[in-house]
Amino acid sequence: MGNFSQLVYLVPLFPLIGFLINGIMWKKMPKTLGGIIGTVAILASFCVSLGIFFEVKAPGFQGPVVVHLFDFIQSGRLVIPFSFQVDALSSLFLLIITGVGFLIHVYSTSYMHEDEGMVKYFAYLNLFVFSMLLLVLGANYLIMFIGWEGVGLCSYLLIGFWFKNRDYTNAAKKAFVMNRIGDLGFLVGMLLILVNFGTLGYQEFFGQIHSGQVAVTNSTYNWIALCLFIGATGKSAQLPLYTWLPDAMAGPTPVSALIHAATMVTAGIYMIARTGALYSLTPMILHVVGIVGLATAIVAATIAIKQYDIKKVLAYSTVSQLGFMFLALGVGAYTTAVFHVMTHAFFKALLFLGSGSVIHAMGGEQDIRKMGGLGKKMRITQITFLIGCLAISGIPGFAGFFSKDEILANVFSHDPVMYALGIVAAMMTAFYMFRLYFLTFNGSFRGTHDQEHHLHESPAAMTIPLIVLAILSIVGGYVGLPEVMSEHHALASFLAPVVTNLGEHHMAAGTEWLLMGISVAAAVVMIIFAWTINSKPEFKENTGLAKVLENKWYLDEIYDAIIVKPIEALSNVLDKFAERKGIDGLVNGVGKTVRWGGDRLRLLQSGQVGFYIFIMVMGMVVLFALSFFQVK
Image 1 (cartoon, one colour):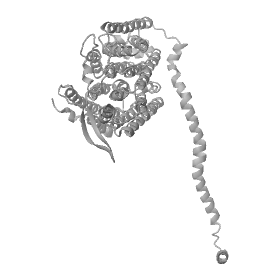
Image 2 (cartoon, rainbow, N blue to C red):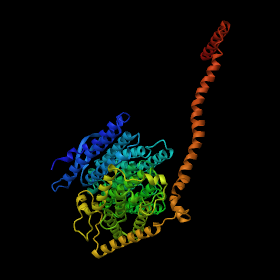
Image 3 (tube, helix red, strand yellow):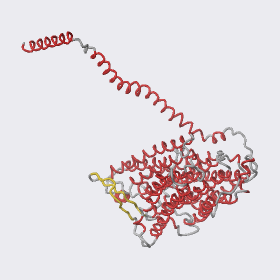
Image 4 (cartoon, one colour):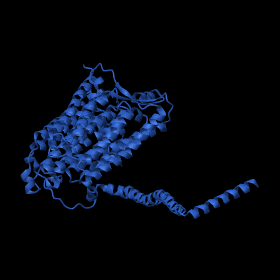
C-alpha cells in the first residue's frame, strides 16, 4: 500500500485550486472548460480519497494518523496546529463527499449549460466541497469550525445563485442567519472545551476525558454537549432551526442534491459521532438529542404529505431523515447514524438529481399537479427514481432498508414508545415518496400541450450519474447487514477504532425478524395506500388539518410573529430614537455647537482699529485687576 495518508492535504487542495482558477477567470473562461476544471478537481480528490480509504482499511494501519501542516495559532501555552486527522470516520466521509460530489459535478455540466454564470457556479461548488473536506479532515475543533463556516457561506452563495429573484436571495439570507444561530452554540461549546481542557485537538480532548486527568463536573460536560448539539441543530436542520432547509430549494437542483444529500446537512451528525466519547458521558443530553430527532422526523414527514412542489417534498423528506439520524445518535447508536448518512447520501442525491431531470424536461415546472405520465417519455429517470423511492421507504434489498431497520432496532432496545413513533414516521415516508412517484410518472399528463410536446429524456451527462447512484442505492446497504443475516457488520468493525456504539444491544433473532417484518409491512401498506389514492388524482382545495400541513404547520408564520416582527419593531424604534436622535443627534449637535460658536466669535473680527484698541485696553484692565486681587 502507498503512503496515501501523508498526501491527505491534496484532497482539499484540488477543489481549492479549481475554485481559484474558475473564480478568477469566470468572466473570460468558456463554460465547458469551467465545467471540466471543476469536475476534474473533484475527481482528483476522489482518487486520493480512495487511496486513503484502502490504506485505512488495510489490516496493518496504525491510526489515527495526524498530518501536521503548520501551527495555526500560537499564543503562550496555547498552540492550535493546522493539521488533518486520517482515520476510519474521516476516510469514509471523504469518499461520500468526493464520490457523490463528483457525480453532482458531472450532472451539473449538462444541467447548468444554458446558464451564463456556469463558471462562477462551478467555482462556488468547488469552494463548497473544499470547505466540507476541511470540516471532516480537521484534527481539532477549530479546523472543523473553519469548514463549518465555509459551507455556511457557500450555501448562501449557491442558494441565492439566481440573485435577481428577490425570493431566492431571501431564502439564502434565511439559511445564513439560521445557521449563525446554531454556529454561536458551537462556538460557545468550543470555548468551554478550551477553557476547561486547554486544547481543541480531538485526541488530547478525548484522552483527557478517558483518563479523567482534568477535574470537571458533570454539568460542564452537559453544557459542552448541549452547546455542540445546538450547533448541530442549525447545520443539520433540526427543530426548531429547520425552516431554512426547505427554502434552500431556491438554488439550482444539483445544489439541492449537494447540500441536502451528502454534505452540509450531515455535518452535525459527523460532529456528534466524532464527539461520541463526550456524549456517552451525558445521558441527559443524549436523550434530548433523541427526542429532538424524533420530533423533527415526525413533523417534517407530516408536512411532506401535503406539498406539491417536487423539490419541497424531497426537502422535507431530508429533514425527516436527518431526524432519524439524530434519533440514532440519541440512543447511542453512533455507527448506525453514520451508516444512514451514507445510504441517505446515495438515495437522496439520486432523488434530487431525478427531480432535476424531471424539471429539465418540464421546462422549469416544479408542481407535481401539472405532471403525470412522464414515465412513458423518461424511462431511465423513472426507473432510477423508483429505486430511490424504494430505498428511502426501507424496502428489503435496497440500501435504506438496512440502515433504517438498524436505527429502529436500536431505538426499540432503548425505548419501545420512541420505536412506535419512529415506525409512524417511517410509514409516512413511504406514503409521501410514492405519492410523489405516482403523481409524477404514472397516469396521464396534466400539463400544457406545449410542455407535453417538449418532454424528453435528459442527456447522458445527467442520466449516467442517476444510474450510478441507483446502483449505489441498491448495493450500499450490504456493508451493514443485521446480526440475523451476518455476524460481521462490515461498517461497524471498520469504524470501531474511532466510533463505537454506546451499550451494544444483542437482540433475539426472532425479535429482530419481527421488527423487520413490522417495518416492511408498514411501508408496503403505505405504498399500496398511496397508489389507491393517487391512481386517479383529484386536486381539491385543502381544508382542516390538510390545509395546516400544506401551510407547514404555520411554523414560518409563528416564527415571523414571535421573533422576526418584534425584532424589526425594536430595531425601528432604536433606529428612530437611539440611532437618529441619540447617536446622530450627539454627533451632529457637536458640529452644530462648534459652528454656532464660530459664527458668534466671528463677529469680534470687525476690521475697525478703534474697536481693537478698545479690546486691548479692556484686556489690560482685566489683567491689572487680576494681579491686584492676587497680591491682596
